[in-house]
Image (tube, rainbow, N blue to C red):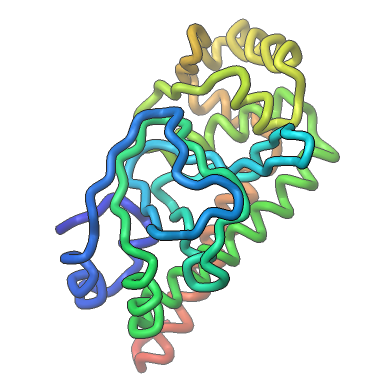
Length: 244
């Protein structure tokens, strides 16, 4: 079995092969809910294609998107190793193709696989760094540049080509803006020849232009990945007695 999920691809071949018989192939359409707040985590989902929105639900019923998960990571990977309770809503934003692993089997593997333990720790560290960056971005960067950043991130994570099925509601929640503001910004990016946008579908027309338009946070997030993964690989090589 092969996988397009980057977290799983960080495992050694032996560790992955031991897990392979226990994976369940999972597919679902956009709009399906994987977890509601305070649900018991029964599965850990490793996307290979598509996007999952992690949504915080307020007491009033208001919601805000706090993370997007695609082929770079997993949903439930922290909770399954801890309380076993998912505290947010996990909603499929773009049609999902994933491998999923029963939570109990995941905990066993985490206890027995050095490469899975390292990959999970790296990904958790990266999530924290990106969360902090997103807070700083919201405070300091203009909305059009923030949208360019997140469109690039969504394309990287969804593995679905240039077309991204993103609604105005999703984009507004992702950026913490009103729908009317998102409509205006998307029209601006369209007029600049960077995207097309119609019927809840964003098409990235000029990726290089979007990278130039993006705030520093896209380049910063890429730097975080190289720094965290590169350092971890070097440490492991030294531990194994090989070259760093």
